[in-house]
Image (cartoon, rainbow, N blue to C red; front, side):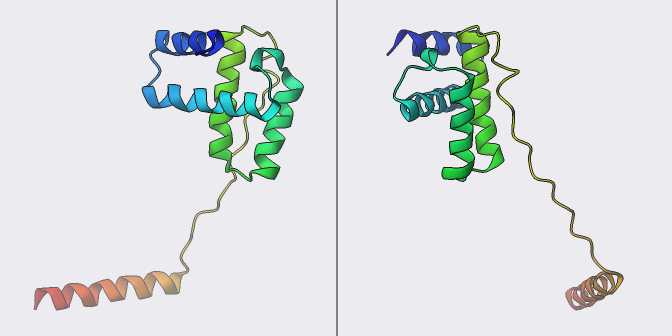
Length: 124
């Protein structure tokens, strides 16, 4: 285990991170380092940005998956490596806005009448 990985594990342990969170963060940091074939402490905000673009465009990951990767990198650079640029230069992706499904008045009437029929059959 590298000293950086050990320190990050200790930092997460001190903050009482869940075991799954720790494993997930370590996995994302490892993928980040492997993507550039360099240690994360030798990489900077431009490489973080390139990695985010890679996750979005090449790997086509969902915003929630990218958020976990971003959280891992923010933690690494802000807490473990104490970089002053960490949080400001690593943007969190926005989740897409989804409109709720709204039934038309006719659909509501159909649904309620079918439920009435089901209830009367169940009572028989």
